[in-house]
Length: 466
Ligand SMILES: Cc1cc2nc3c(=O)[nH]c(=O)nc-3n(C[C@H](O)[C@H](O)[C@H](O)COP(=O)(O)OP(=O)(O)OC[C@H]3O[C@@H](n4cnc5c(N)ncnc54)[C@H](O)[C@@H]3O)c2cc1C
Image (tube, rainbow, N blue to C red; front, side):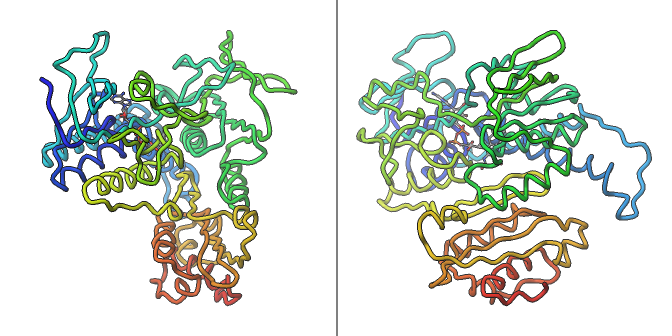
């Protein structure tokens, strides 16, 4: 039966479901339209969470086979039970997606299952597969938020069949460890899933068009990350253009411009993601997407159509779950009160490989290109007591500060638990800290966070433990 709401949100990923919770907290009558039976979007179902569950399990397996001996821990014959590993991953996903269901109930959010399609004049239809629009399933709201997220990008010549040539979704559930895997794309998703299968025994080759990995991240830290990942078995072929990947008798032939084809058992296509706007009815409200399929919005997340907003992966900016969440909250708070804010200067970005690679703020290249005078300081984990105790001494922390004001402009980490360490840097930057401010904070000993303090001291040439 059709209903009227204050807000209808299309898509229950981290952008949409968090926006819905905040809207309900603010007293708005809220509905969420989601086409998948499970809530949580790409992130919970086929993205952040299952990949991290597999990264954790595969790292334990890898550590047991390579590093336990260093700690004096002997294991007998080590065996991989992939089915149990995959089931644990599915259990983690199911408990979290059910948790979002619980949060919807707790907050009185109406859930509408089906494909949301804009109808103009504040109306949205909820379509069921293979069926047309029924008036009974057309709902209205004063405010509609598009939070439909993204899907894997395609590459001409690479035919994804979901079996031999796959996207990240299928690479989360291979029934057996492939003997060989070619990953096309050296971004976060390619490196993470490549690492999972390499740790479990696959021969993994990462092919990347650019001459470096992790485009956009600080080049020095990315290069150090590449070396460390190569040491752990990832074979990088950078600056190569894949022209096609096609199944043949032996497996998949990956053709590369200017060199011989590589044959492998499986190919993971990980060349980025594109916004989901298919059959969304954008034309009914006169919205056109940009050249990369994204919906343009202003600083208030307004699309230009009265009462219609967009957030998360479907709009320009980093395609990250926490960025989508922040936008969802800010969008709804603006609707409710006129105020809401996202600090785009302080959005951390993390690659959950081993070691982890994390950054917040600007890279050295960006600061240099902007002509901003800078001072840099770095500190290696090899000189940090806790890293030694963990037997994880690879990598370093690099802090970039303004040469005159000392304000921190960027922090880049490759090393143990970089993903957790970056939170302190993000908080400091959000409060406009200088490197001196962070250097003067008392950091507990022995912790990895002392390496951040030392990197800040290094900005001023006062490093203590080197
Ligand atoms: C393998 C992988 C690993 C990742 N790891 C990380 C990570 O570690 N950290 C991180 O920050 N980010 C990670 N990401 C990216 C992260 O998942 C996305 O940035 C995030 O999910 C975007 O949130 P969103 O709410 O904008 O969209 P999504 O999470 O994509 O959710 C959109 C939802 O809308 C639904 N939908 C789409 N169209 C319609 C429609 N017309 N009607 C109804 N429903 C619709 C979809 O079914 C989906 O549930 C990862 C992504 C992948 C693929």
